[in-house]
Image (cartoon, rainbow, N blue to C red; front, side, top):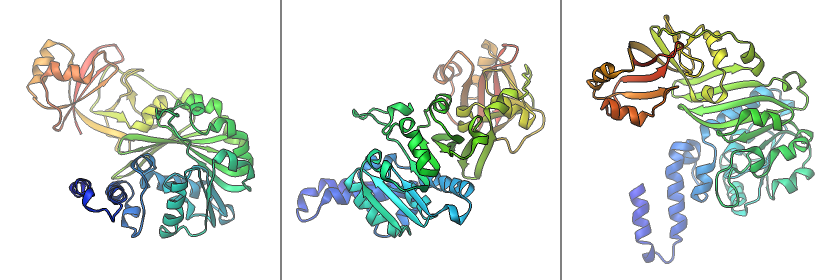
Length: 387
């Protein structure tokens, strides 16, 4: 399809009666949707926006995860009359979550995205929808009470540069915090995966849950749930680390209080198996809780690698069988160079992967994994593993 798009662009001058740019946009949108939004790609008649809107929207996988949170937090039909998406965009989250409610209100300040929502949402099975072309900050004070409000602040400034802090996004949800809680039973905020979670918890009131969502090992978004009536969890909100993989969903839950109290032992000896937490866990940092829950030993306070003699198959992350542990010295370098190919990871070690690849004379790939790290007794080692 990519070659068809290029061919169309080159022949645009021959088609004066056709909006070639619009046709190219639709073909590009269809191509991207086949991977990111299979429901959209399979639905006849869908119209796509400019590339940036499609690139920035949620994937169908992460939108479906949000819908599962609706089921968990608003589980009675009486609590699913009304939902408002205050920052509609291309409407992926609205389409997936909106079908769970009797009525969806879709708010978006871009008139073209509003037109697309009016066209696309009924095709996707969301029929009871009101599309409002307005800035959400102007519309929010007039909004009747909702069962759910969803908001995804824009994470780019007026110059198009990425922003991560809550106060730098548009709108600033910390400034709207009280009004959002007054207007809904539950508020769901989608934030950047680069967000400082601790800082966010200091800025927001009513936080009961924080979901750190990854897909295939890449952290995609942070979801913050607010509820003014759930006083039990406000002081220590539930942290949920999720990685959506081809095999299913890996999930680990903890609170900051549990993490503070968790018992963790450190070891200078590497056992038969090695474990690397997934991206969501690395972001949320429940490192002591992981050790306690799975009965593992940590290699070093700053290495974030774990070991055991018995295999723990449900550990949420990558799991390896240890083949050998070598000291980081010239003799080991010669031995490792004979591998010719390996996957290298660095944890708590003063060198980069590129530096080590050059030192070991290795190309990337194969079924051997090298973890270059520091143990609890401060020995620097290379751990040779197989998945």
